[in-house]
Length: 333
Ligand code: CUA
Image 1: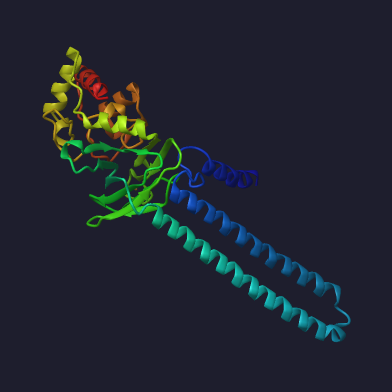
Image 2: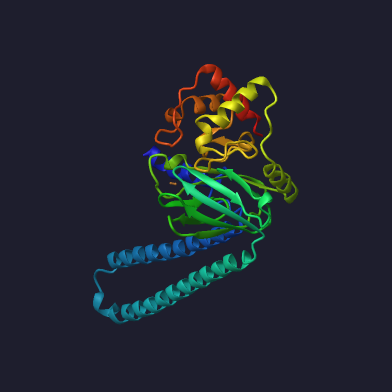
């Protein structure tokens, strides 16, 4: 019984706090959904309480006057009539309030982001996100994976595609969900209102690693965003130490280069996450592990034990190869 009472409370607390919360309202659309949600809760709660009160009053009344039913017949009828009219009127008002509020929220969402200042392409894959910051100047296009940086107060248009099955793009703290459907392009507008670190999550079951298909979202000041994008536009840093050089040689000529791209190196494949600035990210493998040296060793040495079913194979690197690859990957800030 205690567990039954505690779990809804924990759920509500969990939903209110942290980096992934539909009750945060830290984006324009999220904030609209939030006040609309609370309005629905208030109106529906009021209706529910009124129905419950009417039911209790009716039972109480019936029990009280069992005897002189004849004399009260007329009075009861007129009371019932008044009550019914009042109830129908109240329901109509409640429904009109909810309809108007939904319309206002919808128009606000549509108008606010009509002129996006930032265009981002997000392509879903089992089980990671390919991200491209679009620019008319080809040298300024940025490719990254599993991380989204957004300047606060700037409306961004996110175009969504899928390379395999249906996924769903969802950053609960900022906005609603949008499906990514193979062969079609959908979109969602993001207008973050508060600087902070957030988490997005694929919200459509898409296979065994659906739960490990997350997205790190950083909302930052415009100046910080400009610094970030300028850093991302640069090619990968060159290896410096002999160990990094050995790692560079392995990564750019062996298995890794068959799938990954590292700008400024011979590795230019596009079927797996872009690694050009890999070490600047907050997590590994689409939010599966926090970025750290230990986790990176575990991931590269045996991805299939960390994220079974993913397309990253367990290669079976020799210890010295693993050290070298890790040294080079950590250089990719
Ligand atoms: Cu992609 Cu669930």
